[in-house]
Image (cartoon, rainbow, N blue to C red; front, side):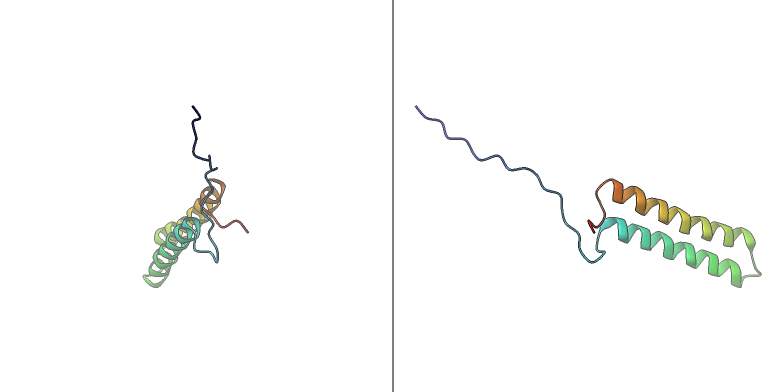
Length: 77
């Protein structure tokens, strides 16, 4: 008796085009929040701790994008 098996397909990752990847969205949201915090800090005085926190959020956004792209959540080009 012959047993037929289903063809095995390799699982392919999702392809993100035009920057619509989770890495891009995450970086954009965190960076925008950082710019808002830094702007509020600059307009209110200037409040230097708020400006520094805003700048740190922008740096965190850049690191998050690099890490997420390395994990496969970024654009392929």
